[in-house]
Length: 347
Image (cartoon, rainbow, N blue to C red; front, side):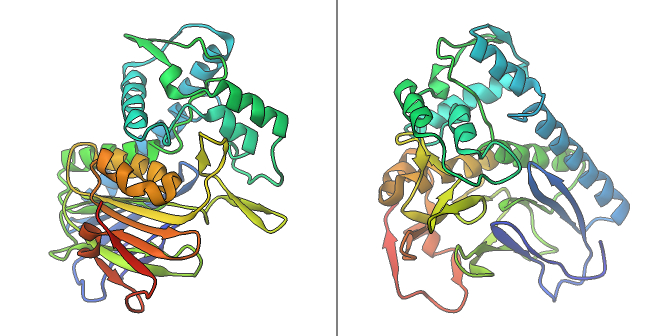
């Protein structure tokens, strides 16, 4: 898409291309990972930009098909083997993802845990359709008694196994971030120096938008439109977890897809939490994974931010009050003015 400016309302973030930008910004969209995906490339001829964006979207589709948790895939085959108590040979790529996911789970004290696939299934968040009712309490109690997690997975080279048959891997809270890192590698290899990739609100940028910093807006959890905007530098990534994207209500109570492994129930006390990850290796994966334990931790999020080395955090608690780290305060521009209920917290 060229010759006009773009303003895209993402699931969790908004992406802005300012009206004063005269140079072309090419945009290509798709639907992958159960969400809308877009690739914006600035300052290149359309043919080159189209080819680079297409290469990114092909990789996204491959990752989605390879690591789908409940449709036939390499990951579902692993889960079937774990449930049967069998040893499964995995690819080198999957082994690397599993090791990294275990590392991130340890850093987040298990609040981010890709090993809770059975719990996700019990709540009905494992399908494209939203659940309509609460899970069976006896089944939840049984899961809590077993307390399976990715730490139960044993890897010996490419051989994966576990004595815990309730273990099931779901990369839903991690794979979009991995895809962002893959996208930036592909784009750089294609000679792209200026781009923005948005996967349902998980954003990573390269360079600038024709000399101007890329700007994204952070979605308000209870109102339409953004509550704040932030400009991003080369190699930075933003990830948001919110209770307003995938949820259902029973008797007036909201049950969101962000599950607390300690209780086996949806986390409460936070409406939305955004992290900004400064340029570093695997910034995309960290932006996706880090927002989960901080969201689930509620008021204890600063301790988890320190453990994960995340300095830029914005949180909206269950009552709509804002908390943000000092570093994040320096980067945000509030929409509609500075909110009254705002607390600046050292990370």
